[in-house]
Image (cartoon, rainbow over all chains, first blue to last red):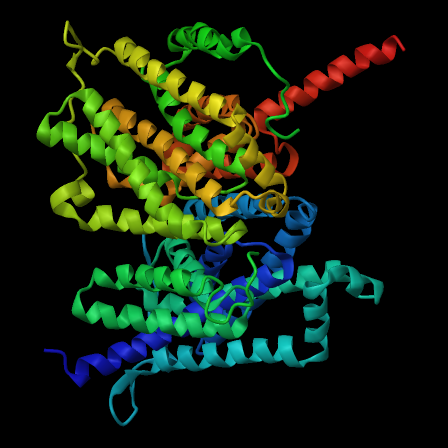
Length: 295
Length: 334
C-alpha cells in the first residue's frame, strides 16, 4: 500500500535529484549550444567537483568549511575548464564535430583514471556538513535540511545562469556568437574568448553540481561521473539540446519519474527513464523545448 | 583522405584480400606473445570493422557497440551452455539476435542525426546492460554465463576439437575473412556508394531521391550483424560471458581500436584491434600500471594525442609517411 507518507518524500527527492541533474545538464547544454560539442568529460568534471569538496573539507577544519569548499570548487573547476578549452578543444574547431566528442571521451578516461590513481578506488565517506544537519518541517513532511538547501541553491543557480544568458548584455554577446559567429566577429566580438569562458562556466556548473551532491552520495568513487553523465544525456534528449529551460524541465521530469517508479519496484527506476526518453523520441524528436533541427 | 576513393578493380584484385589475408594473418599466431591473443585480435577486429563501416563510411558514431557485441555473446553462450546446440547454430543465432536488437535500437537512434545519435546509442547501450544485469534467470546477472564448451565442432563427416588454440584461431580466421570480404564488397556496391554519398552531403543524397533514414538504418543493422558475429565468437573464445561486455566501456574500447588503426579504411579495424590488444597486454605487464587501471590513463593520453595529431590512425599515418617519401624522390628529379 502506497501512502502519502511514502509518496511525498519520494516526490521531493525526485525533484531534488532532478534539480541537481538539471544543473549539470544546463552546463552541458550551454557548451553544446555555444561550441557544438557534446562534452563527455562533463561527468568527470562533476566527479572532480565532488572530490574537490571532499578534499577541502578534509584540509580545512573550521566551521563553514563547506562553503569555502564550494567556492574553491567553483573556481578550480572553472580553471580546469579554461585549460581544457585553451589547450585541447581550441585546436579542434573547424574539424568534424565527431573529433571533439572523441577528444572529450579521451579526457574523461584521463580524468577518471587520474583521480583513481591519486585518491585510490576505495569509497571515500563524506558526511552532511554540520550546519545543514537535521530536518526541517515543511508542514506536510519533515525534510532533510541539506536536500532542501541543494534544491534551492541549484534552482537559484540555474535561474542566475538563465538570466545571465537570456537577459544580460554579456549574455546577448554569447547568444550572438552561438547564433552566427562570423557576424559576431565582424561586429568586434572576440568569439574565441567567448568560447573559452562559456566552457569554463559549464565546467564550473558541473563542479558545483558534484560538490553539492557529494555529501548525499555516501562514499565517493571515481566512476560516479559516468553514471551521472548518462542521466544527463537523457535529460538533454528529453528537454531539448541547447535550452536551459529544457534542461530544467527535463531534469525535474526525469527525477520525479525515477523517484516514483522506485517506490513500486526499485529496478524499474532506471527502465522508466529509458521509456520516457523513448517516448519523447517517438513523438517529439527535437525534445520538449528543443528548437528542432538535427544538430 | 576519405575512404572509398579507389578506382575500378579487376576480378583478381577483388579476390586478392582472400588470398593475402591468410598469408599475413597465420604467421601472426606464431609471433604474438600469447597463443590466445591472435584469435582475440581477430574477434575484436569484427566489432571494430562494424564501427568503421558506420563512422568511416556512413558518418555515424556508434558508441553502443559493446552492448550489441554482448547480445551476440550472450545469445551464443546461453544456447551453447544450456541447450548444447551445434556451434554453427549458436554463431548464427548470435548474429541474428544482434541484428534484431540493432533493428530496434537503430529505429530510435537514427531519428536524430549527428551527435545526438551518439548519445542515443550510448543510452541504449546502458538499457541493454541494465536488462542483462537484472534478468538473472536468463543471463545469470552478475555471475554471467558459465559452462560454454567449444570442444566439439561437428561437421557431419568428422568432429573438430576447437579447444587447441591453433584450431580455434583458424576457425575464427575463416569467419573473419568472410566478414571482411562481405564489408569490402558492401562498400564497393551501389549501396555503399550511397552511404558514402550521404556522409559527404545528406542534403544532396536526399535531393537525388535516396531516403537517408532507410540507408542509415540498413547500415546500422548490417553493422549489428557483424558485431554479433564478433560477440558469438567471443563467447567461444572466453568460454564465459560476463555482463562487463555490455558495459559502455566495451564500446569505448572499440572506438579506441578503430581510431588507433584508422577509421577511414577497413584494414584499420585489424591494425587497431591488434595494436590495442598488444598494447594493453604490454602495459599490464608492468605491475605499477595494472594497479588502479593506470594503463587506462595511458590509453586515454594516447587516444587524445591520436585525435589531435593523427586522425587517420596508424594506417593514415603510414600513408602520410609513404606520400612524403615518394614526394621527396620526385623533388630530387624535377
